[in-house]
Length: 403
Image (cartoon, rainbow, N blue to C red; front, side, top):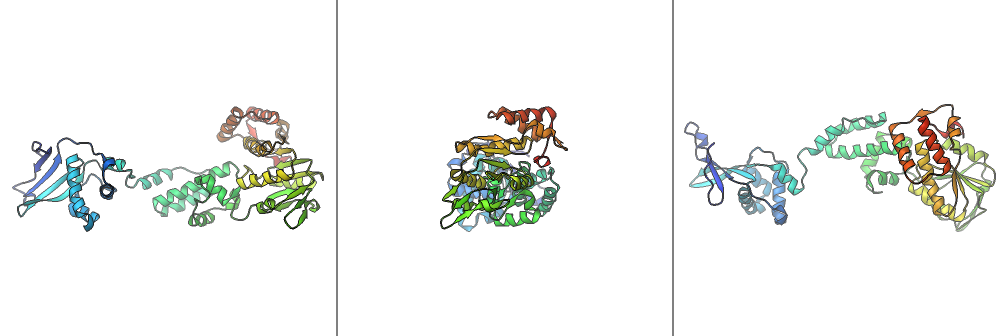
């Protein structure tokens, strides 16, 4: 096509007249000869909003002028005409006009670089969610039940599917870290806010997977412990020493404690639930035993900190002889350190690992975690020895095999 020289405004014209095609008679295209900067940050909000409405899903194909006018609506008709002229003079649109009754009228508009306008306006690319969903569906989870749950998301709009897939991804990380907690703990872990999982998402997740398998509870969490002490509550006392094995206390019950005695000789923390029950049933009468539910959730930390204010005693902490067990013991031990109390690992020696009848090889994640632990805050001697032994043997185990 032959374009004219730029006019005084820099606009070039291409006539579309073709004597052999009557449909092109009296038609022309207009475009700027040299594009100019378009400083959208200085535009009025109404102009930015209308341009965003136009280019949100625009491609480089021409759009009928009447389509843009419908999108603007009658209350923005004058704004639309003025905006088109601004865009033409900036070189971001090409306008096709037809001649009728002595005037040239816009017929079609083509955005020359709509993706650049979307970027400047802070808009996502059309079908960006669909492309992201197609990409993310290529990955497989380490847990088959999560793959099954992800397949069902194909029927959802891409944006919603992406949001729910992110929750499945968080579940996989939660499981890998052996965490336990309430819905709010999981929401904080997954989205950084305790209230950012909607009721609809909760219902879907509850139906998609067994949350019990992931140690996520929608009910009141419980502190499991063997405690040879009498608790003084607001209007009553509770002799837990009379319990033959262990008791379950809610965080609210622990908050209601006004005093407690006697303090135990030692707090024994045990990670594995089966091992905890064994230790609780056989512990000496002057020792307390506390279940440590994996990486200690926030409600557990708050409750245990409250117990230590009433019943201070050093701790012996027993976790699985593996990298996660070392990390969990460190996190739990911080509660005793913060309370000015001593704590030591218990049943976490190289000999304990060697004594297990069955052990498993380290994964890449295990090795990465072990490297971070060794390079981080200095470990207690027993944990440092265990970490070195795990690294040397490239094996890990579970305390249920010996405790």
